[in-house]
Amino acid sequence: MTRLSQYSEAFWGTHFTSTAGFEALALRMKDGRHMCKEFEEYLKQRYEAENRYSKDLHKLERNMKLKDDIGVLEKSWNKLKEEMEKMVQIHQDAAANFLKQMDDVKKFNEAQTTKKKAMEETVKKYQSNKNSLYSRCMNNHKNYKDKCREKDSASDNYNLQRSTVTTQTKDLEKANKAKARAEDEAVKAETAYKSSLDALESARDLWEKEMQAACDVFQNLDHERIKFLRENLWVSLNVDSQVAVEIDDCCESVRRVLENCSMENDICTFIEKYQTGTERPACIVFEDYYANTDTMGRRGQRSGGSEVTATEKQWYHNVRRGGGVFLCVSLTVTRSW
Image (cartoon, rainbow, N blue to C red):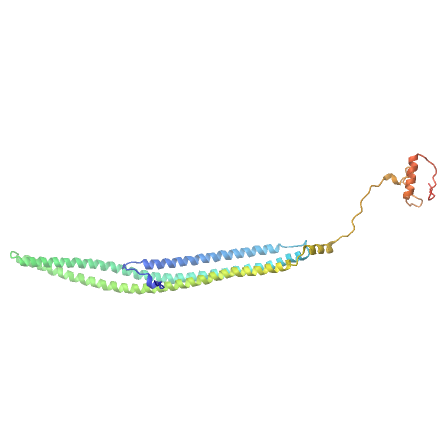
């Protein structure tokens, strides 16, 4: 079965006053307008989201201030900060694209609505006129049939009166006048009926031409709308794809720096820059207070202020332990007190 491809072939009806085809097309136009509005709202929300995200990224980028690290990791962080500036611009460009698309969709929808409304009003006018004339024609048709029946009845009555021998002259004349009046009214009714038929046919012809034109206009509008939405939806998806590609390029730039990051190298770099020495401090040992005193409880000093040697300290310590007090002559040096 061959599929119908033209609105002008598929939206008619056998009932003379039927508006089902026109209503189906009008609903189609209304649904198309709603879809354009939904797409416009989608683009508006995408614009706001991209604009808001770019501002958040910009704020984040300004707060990225690394001061306490060195080496390749620091370079990677600085590279990320640099690439985030590009990311901000990428999302700003995406927001601008969505805003422009939103404006284009809005203008397109308004132009389509204007054309659709003008055609709908024209068809409704001819449709209303056709239906009004149809109603009048049907009334004239009914009146014509009634007058024809009255004419036949008057004619039969006249013939009956004439064939009856007892009929008086005045009754026959009365029946004849009624017959003539009925015939005259039947002729008038017939004339009015035929006239209304001619007017109805003229109205039907005008309506059919306008309906044909409406079908063509609505199909063209639908064709334009589908094409426009398909192309713009494609473009909006391309914006997302382009953003993803450009953002990935920014990320790849950071990854290329990170590839050179080595934990060992960054640690060695820190050591080279901030090292404080290789020798560790010596242990603190216990110092005996009495190790440096003589037999009289004085801290021993050689004449001239030089300190007593370890051998001398031990000797004096032994003397003190023995309890002897005498003039000491050092085995190694002469001491004076």
